[in-house]
Length: 317
Image 1 (cartoon, rainbow, N blue to C red):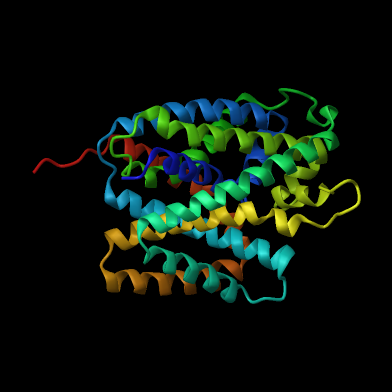
Image 2: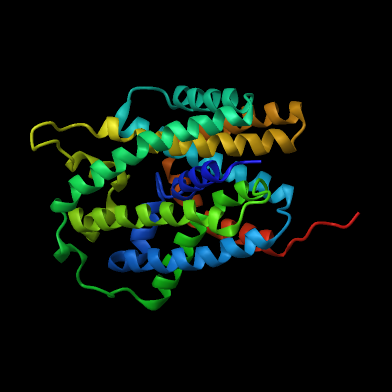
């Protein structure tokens, strides 16, 4: 059983992870200046869907496997593209992917409590960083960059609500089978906190850069950190602040790989990892156009899996 405090921490990280490395860009392109509204309404819808999922006693194993694969796919792409674009652009992507996979594979061999302790350490480091950065960036933003308000068509607002809801809910499905005797209010705390910090970061992106620039730039959630300085003197600290992102990727990646290990034969599991690694390297990382192509359709897959999670019931013995 996962204790209440650890569940809140894990849910907080999982709620945020799919927005990193593309989720913000997708939402901003759909919702434009109404993205914050989409986020707030998407959080409310997601809260309701999370409650429905919580009331179910069972989440289908095959759905969990597919969600785990999807989360790993997005995590690895986010990690390697960001690293190759801004951090270590001369490092081969296969090395970046390999290090990430080794880290989460190694952690999946450990006892559950070891990873939970790591998540506690991660949140203790993340909270001060988030507060420090968010408060430091607040004065830079300009309310005028949010205007004109409500200039988005209703159909796009509805799409934005769905995108936010799906991004925030899908990784949490992996955690619901571990809820045991926890109450819904215990499970929902991490979700709400994760959503609120995500929405606030969207506000910072739009208020600082303006929607026109935020829509076209890659990784606006990283570039915004370049605006952060300490006492207007110390700058270029974004590579330290990105540590919170790394925690998100590690924790969500570990849970996804844990689900795969628990539901696949051992040999099948390792064969899958090899094929997965090679496939991403040759078909996606080397062909960024392919990433843009699948990004437009992956939300349809997420929505289908979410609906199946709600309607599929456990077979009676």
